Image (cartoon, rainbow, N blue to C red; front, side):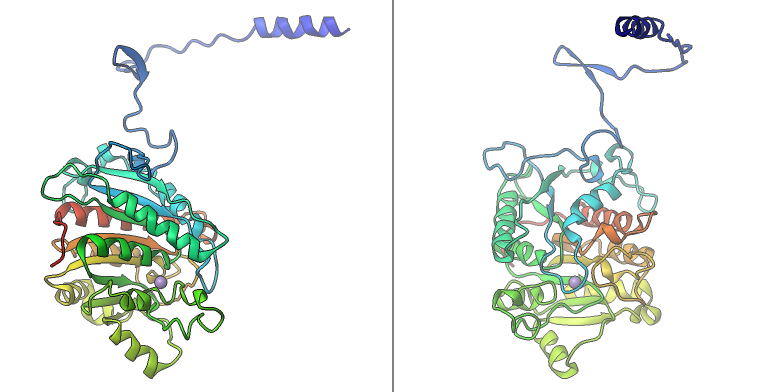
Length: 375
Ligand SMILES: [Mn+2]
């Protein structure tokens, strides 16, 4: 019985259908010759292979012996244990990369400016993620500090612009502190343009510090700490603010002391996006700039996948118009944070929006190279 079955199976295999498709006119074989060997050409593959940002090459930037040079690097910071509401931003880096899968560097001419940022002067690569423990915030931030240091210590392709610039994929907003520590070493104190619905300058003694000292380092206090550490200039500015503060007098005075002016979410109705651009540019004029985008600056209708959503925010189009309008500023780094893909809807609006924010950062950085050194 068994052997009869085997024979039957063998017979059915042998009789497998042999399908022959007719030849297709103009079909080009994907086979190419690489160093005398046959290879399948993966240039321009969008949905094949492991996911990097915009299908850019992956470089192991955390290995100091590596020889690859780059001018702009993408680095993921999968950390979300500094949040005060919904966690999940540790999955942000991969979510943002997934949102960028349709972007092909060979096929990326902007309909707005007619340029392809990938085909200009800069080598842009994806470093993958910094390995961060999920069990100890203090250790995780030290790990992230180190990763930033390693990534920004590599050589660039330029003799004029010798320090690679980083775009960090968050991660909760605490991760910006590591980025600012890293940029300080190369560029000194910078103006921060901070897109967010919350001010994030809360005094650590008030937000978290009452629990334990290290609990005071979180996604609502990192800008206060950055100010204390001397990393940011008093020419910084928030954009899109609408969340309430706990103590009107103390919180807002403290915010100004940390170096910030404020554009509220509703200011855009009066100023228009162009007016917002002009106000931001005036505030940071003549200084080096770090741009941090908390995706909760967008209305939850456009970006539901975030930890502390606030209604009444900007549209994705408004945010992208404003970011692109900042062209010409000396942008030395940027991040998009608080993307927690688990809360996205089936259309993935949040991760798609976040990936476009990164594209805007890259264009700003390509538009304006920046020399290392303090002002
Ligand atoms: Mn924030």
